[in-house]
Length: 447
Image (tube, rainbow, N blue to C red; front, side, top):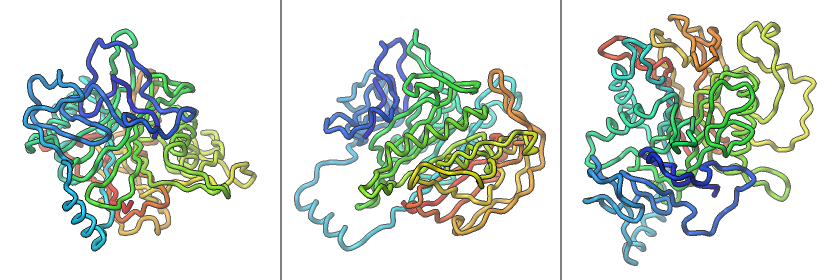
């Protein structure tokens, strides 16, 4: 379903330099069709992890010295086959066991905006934070981890550290850089990346798009955005569950521009509808399970978040009217929708626990709930800490976002939130400062 990354896309590795240009790695709504081609789900130009028809067929860790030269049709030396052919007898045994027991399709997901490496960060440079970030991820035992605000070398560091105690590559990843150089055919900038644990999660399909008027154009940007922004998505299956549904995960990092965020909400909903929704004859919409995670640079009461959740654009109050540096959703009393049966997304944390705390922030106590979907939203006090701004090219993010919720895990209504948690203890042992300026968030889900 949908288009796959082209030859310069990658899973668990980086694109080779100086290769000829290829077709777009994006997925556009106009080109969304179900393909009968056996190679439709077949990424190419991979090393470390070889994927054929969406299935991992072999990987070793550390990689062989010549792994960069391995083709899609060969596996590294010593690689084991994950899904060997089964005899008829084995298939009958599996079918019998399947009919006797049903394992709940439970997964644990994490969202973590880890702050890009910068020489201007002094003691907070990546080399002093990477061990803490890796340990936080490993201790979480998350099945799927969405990473934002990471440069290329940070993703490779995480890939190494997450797998260094394993005999093979247990954690694989898919991601692309936000910027693209047409001359060198190379990606750069922030890598919006999805890590997944292959012991439990199988990758079936993947893609990406940029937030612009031309989402299939690599490195494109639009509206009032100050940098190129993209969304990566993966279609997964829980291999521990025989009859488990496949589900989509979207990972994104929105811009700071008000119009950019508003249009980003429209665009990601278009892709969700294209990939995960089916309109029935009675015009009702059936939504397959999907999860949307990311650092959205928007507050819970903003128009962009309301639009993402409901599909309804209420417009935004002016900053003077709302008394905030953030665009706030206007009163909907005069709103009339021409749309019928819009699909919705549910925030896994309706309490809106603060997540953007700064590198020197001291967050409030950890938040955990057994059934967050049943709770009514409540106010939280701002985090005590320095007033930190995000500087991206020519843009400066409003200071009032400090100590507020800007990181989210949304789910479709057919995904049940079993638990939600904000990890507030993210201190680095060496510096006693936070491992990132954003707190990681987790959710246990029944898909």
